[in-house]
Amino acid sequence: MLLQAAGVLRLRYVQCSQDTSLSPAAASKLADVFEGVAKGSPDFDQIDPKEAIALAHRLIDDDHPELSGMWPRTR
Image (cartoon, rainbow, N blue to C red; front, side):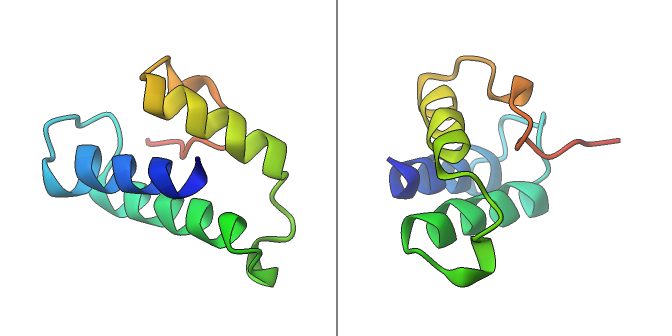
């Protein structure tokens, strides 16, 4: 699920750039987080895997992923 969400992020926000609610740089960073959590990287030990999976589901379903606490805040 997390790896699939990383792919969706990169496709939707980085490669296609049709959805501007998240910058390509922020989307790429979040995709890296998903991949790191999925692969058990110690760099992402502070990330709650359940929260990451919940965000992945919201992202794939396009069900307001921006409401997640993990979603990058843009200003």
